[in-house]
Image (cartoon, rainbow, N blue to C red; front, side, top):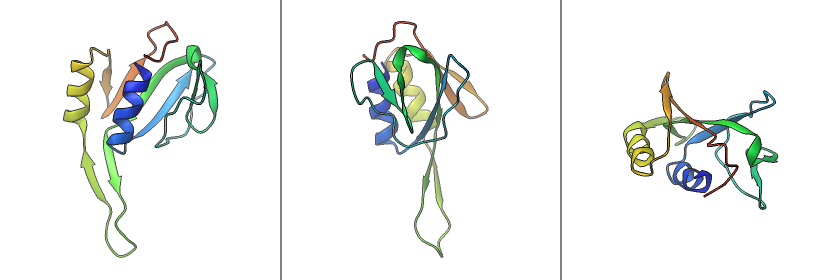
Length: 108
């Protein structure tokens, strides 16, 4: 599940952050990767089984240049459809998508 989500968020250039069971909340980052079995990384490595939830910001920010305003692209519909089609449980709260851990610690 997590790898599919990672691939989609990277393809859409979305920012993600994670909350772990110990209360730690990561910074918003563009990369959600898997450096080795059982571990994920968003700014630093952590055990996959420690994920409480992943939060996704569906708004892509395209920086064009110093004199040109950023472009904001809302990918909410595409992200929502992807999660529904992939049968991934999620909640939408204040324009963010929250994906809780499935409790299995897997990355499928």
